[in-house]
Length: 277
Ligand code: HEM
Image 1 (tube, rainbow, N blue to C red):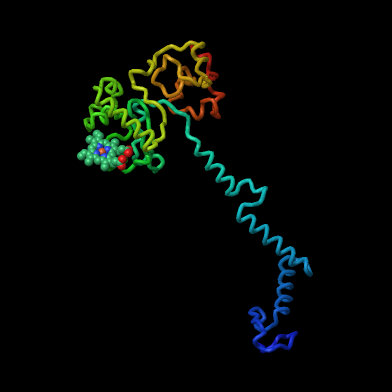
Image 2 (image 1 turned 180 degrees about the horizontal axis):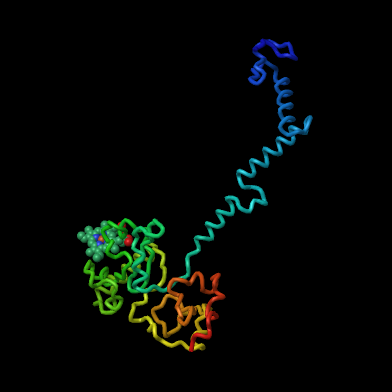
């Protein structure tokens, strides 16, 4: 039932507020009193402490929403820090021709996500995902995705015979060699495609039947920074890890895990030592 004046102040209609809860008209001071009661009810504290408690709760809530509390370890600020950390590029790795073929920008059947697009120019592997429109599926230069294409680019040819042939770059004439250099500069300095590592052609890979001595095994423990002379053309020094009676070179994809800063570094060299000669 609406009344035309406040229950506690006899004031004219224009000075009154409508109180929806009580369905009545009231003055500001009456509204404040009602508000106070409401605060007391919510906070369980009587008198002005109720207001104070409500203000504190509101302030903490606001800070929480804005991730400004010092103890908020899992908030958005931590997420930003993580994202910043993620931006640190992976150290360079080695690629076999087969590994490089994987990075062709098509959809990965296992994850349903688009793979990045890599290509190699004279053995240097670039991440050209920013140029997906050129190299991705359906793009005008998709034939180069996941391939070594230095000789093809230098001679402006789409001939597939020139693909995956790093040695073809060594046999180019002077003019084509300049072209190759121009492409390298364009990719590295103009397009700024990130360099992922080096392509090691199959004929430069060590034989899988090679016997590795304990001494040699110990040499490639992931602490070597410079690529040793005998591994010319590699993007990263070999890192050997044993499993069963086999020795794997995990510098072909596992540098972030097994390299100097890697979290599985402790596995290098140490596993199953007894199986090697
Ligand atoms: C009629 C002949 C061609 C025309 C008109 C043409 C035109 C173009 C244009 C306009 C671009 C974009 C340039 C830019 O934004 O930097 C481009 C990029 C490119 N072209 Fe061609 N092109 C031709 C032939 C070729 C051939 C024969 C090759 C190699 C076999 C080639 C390889 C490339 C590559 C790799 C890119 C992408 C470069 C990048 O990643 O930024 N093009 N082309």
